[in-house]
Image (cartoon, rainbow, N blue to C red):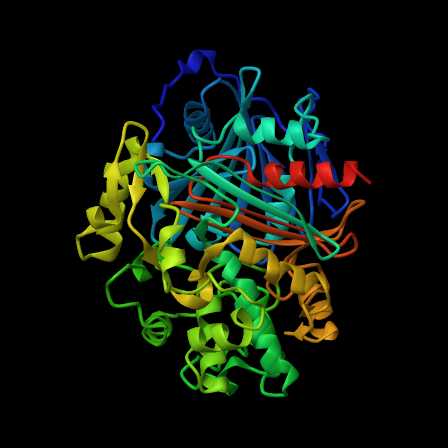
Length: 533
């Protein structure tokens, strides 16, 4: 954890933000700081803006979620965020810090407020000013807000902060080398265009203590990029008439609650309203060499405590893992095979993804496996968090060794259908190319062109608003080069798979550490490709 430096509050100045934007915002609104320091497009549905002369408060209708926007004179991320909390009337001492992460240029800290309420701070600093967004409301939503909120945050732009993207391979590699080794120990990237690999390279260390450098075929954990594989499996069953996307989930899982009418499509688009408890993923992981977590048990245990959706199903979105656990169970029930067997036989093997599996199942995978890494000064906090959530002790078993900068992890697994695959970027790019090529690769058809197109199509809420998702893909239809993508993240992994369907370009980036802007890495890679046209 970074050391916190609290400022004297006499020196703290909080600026009235967005005061000129009174009234109900529309999707096309852009909020501009009265002092001209930043702007933020308000994307999607926001119900109102309130100000008290010291901050702006934006509210999302229909769900328990608000977002404050505050600035302070501070050049310290955490001090600025703490000052912002106090300014809006939240006592930081009453919050329980859960964890932190990076989202683009934002340093994010997740807190629990108790009684199902959460607080999340997003902070970035430029020229001595801290820019802070504070999300409050249901703890699940403050951790995983609707996609239109995420797009609004992505659009936040500090005046003068726009950085020129690399235009050449040399500039791109200089940029990657400027942080790899200090932030993520290692990173691999593969780029394909029009069916051909045009670039592949590894940077930094896949395993520092072993002296193993990252290569294009280094084996990393996929994380949540696996959700696109699960969606592909569902679409294969859809093509066979075995799954109806708009049928209730109870048609396939008799133990799923029927009273809410949640459909398969709503699971695929994260619009079912299934909350992800903050401890959900950590509670389901298992160490290599120990018994794998039973997905059927995970699904049933989750539903035993299910008290209803976060919002009317289909009306909004909240990203999470439980929906893809359920989808994996649908694949198993409908196909008559465990999800992992189905995915191996119907997706991985046909695509020639020889070094990708749900365990380190061959010698080459084990030999080329990257070790997940995170800052050494976070070890005690990680162990305490793992012990508390799992209630089993043994949090220290996840740590293989610690050097002067990094903690290096033992291999671990999560529930297969929500994030369990392991493999190299050189395999992931084959899956991406199949989706770019209308469902076919090297003469083998995995999906129909119609299914691929449907997966990439922006899905809508029950009110006709864009959800931000296709069927598993995050969809960005704007700009000169529209794209779809999916991230993978967690302790010891930081991945992104992005496809530009109209341009025939796929980019896969995988890393064994985080703390850097993965969006900017892929933006930079894409800009080099497009600059060469």
